[in-house]
Amino acid sequence: MRVLYASTEIYPALKTGGLADVNGALPCALADAGADVRLLLPAFPAIAQAAGVLRTVISLPSPFGGATVRVARGELAGVPAYLIEAGELFARAGNPYVDENGRDWPDNHLRFALLGWAAARFADGTIDDWRPDIVHSHDWHTGLAPAYLAARGGDRPATVFTVHNLGYQGDFPAETFRDLALPANFFSIYGLEFYGRVNFMKAGLHYADRITTVSPTYAAEIQTPEFGFGMDGLLRSRAAVLSGILNGVDRDVWNPATDPAIAVHYGEKSLQGKARCRTALRKACGLAVSDGPLFGVVSRLTSQKGLDLVLAALPALVAAGGQVVLLGAGEAELEAGFLAAATQFAGAVSVRIGYDEEFAHRIFAGSDVILVPSRFEPCGLTQMYALAYGALPLVRRVGGLVDTVGDADAQNLAAGTATGFVFADADVKSLQAALNRAFLLWRQPRQWSLLRRTAMQQDFSWAPAARSYLALYRELRPLA
Ligand code: ADP
Image (cartoon, rainbow, N blue to C red; front, top):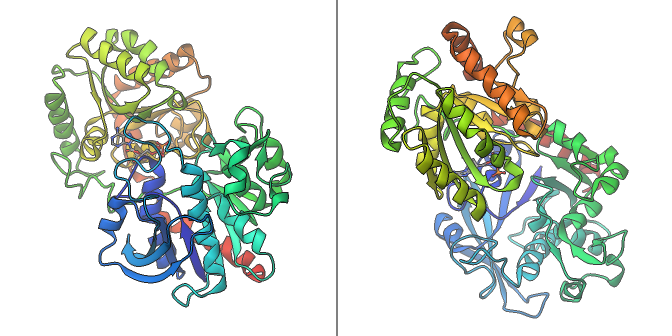
């Protein structure tokens, strides 16, 4: 099974969120499961540097009339990787999608159209003498890959398109369509047009042979107006080819027994180390010595993540004897709000604005609870990392959070399946009620230890996900 896996970011070389973690682990798990999987990524400087010695496999004229497109081969995450270079298009340091002021690059439609086009170009088998059976593309940046393959028609690889976050769609003015070198009839409601504009996400959803998303619950949710971002009708019409496959945890990276970033190693049966990680975290963050629970947050600061609710609940949380450590970056208003709270509640609330991979590990290790109050959450990795590190996730009942956290309700407590705290509504009252339950349980150390042990025993490895993707590829192979 030959699989071309096309995406934009990959841990540890280049990461803006969970997509990079997935891309750093899933291809390797697919290879372990027997697939000949090869990555296709833009040659962003950080990625080119991480891919080792690059060998040019082909130079192609640009379909858009720009600089020559060079495809070079290296290796990333233990699998072969093809990187595409095209003049200035990808040779930009920093964030792959926005400039240093946080604005989308004005030529993003061309940059990511080229990525999709390059994926489709593998179909004729002339690049590195290798023809994929499956082109598996991820999120809007690669949404045009199925469109370019559909435009080729005839004998072509089958296409799988995975939605990691429907909230980002790659939506561009209608005029950009003429730059994309696609047949005119593709700009239609039965194509990639969305309310008079070009939409790369819609292209993926419309043209792919199979659509997957990153949890079973999110697969159902995105077919509803509440979570569909306008695509729910299209997704309902494609329900027969849509499924959810839960993400996993890369235990080589996220494991408190081996993690080089944390103060002391620990495991489910040797939890003294966790207490020392908590003490170290408090000290590093200037938090007071306390016997109350320590709540951690590691997150992009966007409205998706619901952290405005945490901000509103902070005074009560601190009054109840809790402390908070937050690491995040994003919307200015949220950054300012948390920084003000850190001043107001000095010693009880610590806030670090920025991106810091190692500090994130220390927060998971040192926290008693990890807060993930998302408005929507396709899968969510942070609550799974929290479980692995024995920090109980306190999450909203949406998306992958539903599929990974067992609420400490009477039934789960009795059955021994409770691993955290789940609340229903995206409002402060609902969050507050879950926080109150967490404080109550904190005062029952034996119960707390029981939950923590169950949490740490959860096994969200990548192997089952890889098997599910492989089963899906096999179903499609007749098309390939
Ligand atoms: P999303 O992809 O929506 O941001 P996920 O929970 O799927 O959410 O993945 C987030 C990933 O990004 C996790 O690996 C998390 O640890 C990491 N992360 C988020 N914000 C930061 C930050 N400020 N510093 C370090 N890591 C972060």
